[in-house]
Image 1 (spheres, rainbow, N blue to C red):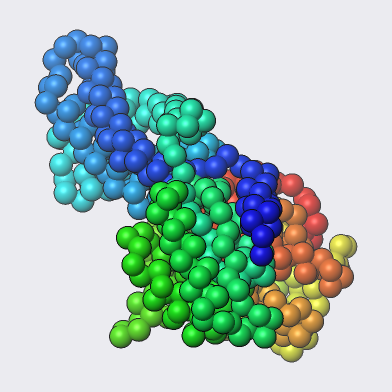
Image 2: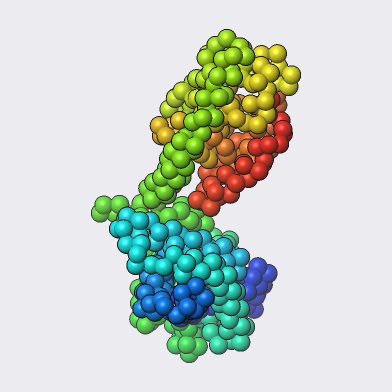
Length: 488
């Protein structure tokens, strides 16, 4: 293949990369520890400044400056630890402005929640000034957002100035493999400058002449030495073991990294996480929706809020229960079989809103002006008050505050047969409210298309779960619970 053809491939790679975003040099990694150190410094200074300001205004100079320094160091250390765990300082993330602001604000909140919990458990509240910590927290929310803006701007300016140079690499491999590999076309975005492409002399039937191959590889070696190339990227189908071995042996004399990228077939598998698995490594074809830490965090928030709600709502429960019993004969609570986490059945608690207690192989959904719904039941359903007793299911560990809404067993079996992805909803605990509900997919589903949209919303929630998303859904639920929507 001619040099003109090689140059054309490089130009195509460069054009495809430049269409997407500003190239992020791999050398931007040098900024990460500097940004982390910068965060430590400004947080300590802010803690001391907030302390002395509170001292001057509220205590008239009678505060202890040493405690202000201690609280600043404690917050800075926790912020740095949480930030590293959340990949706040990963080089490509430094340029993601909205992501940086949102993530840093959440980390700031987590730091103070963690500190408050620690102070409560250790009974050391006297060591911290509540006024100073409140001022520290509120001012920090603003300052951390400003600092993220400054960091992103500085990194952009540094990259644009050309102070950080991308790694110079060459591509060696089969021409069709290089052209078909989408990862290679994105190299420019990740800080690599593709200087030249060296197609190997391999026939269509995958045979090759050893002498011709050695000649081309000697050309590669000469070019690497003359042009000061930093890395060699090899793109050869992994099934061609003889060719791979020959290329590896010839390039062994060079003191630069030689990296083999996955071929188009293997790449689809290696896009997934790779883990140590005893004496070998394994590709994770499917992950649990939540890690152990995330699961415990979500469950802890669920039970904490559910316990508080139950205590506060006890009088409300008594009044509603009495009203239901007085209006129509039957129990105040309605228990119905639902399918929960991992397909396990459980009995859900609801205030009774109908004159019937359907819980069998056939359950008819409530419709507008349904005669089975009592007068009080219509109001309870309109305001979603009938769902409140499900906090008991949350305390029992059968449900979560936020998650895919559980359906009656009869409906669950029907939709599982009609919608291929329906059962995936059971990968997380069902919730009292959910992403589908706050987006309007609640109430009656007379058409299968409506249920499909509800399922799609549930699957999106499972895929993109975060603690902040749960909090957001709970807040939106409170706002929308007074709207009639399509619940009846």
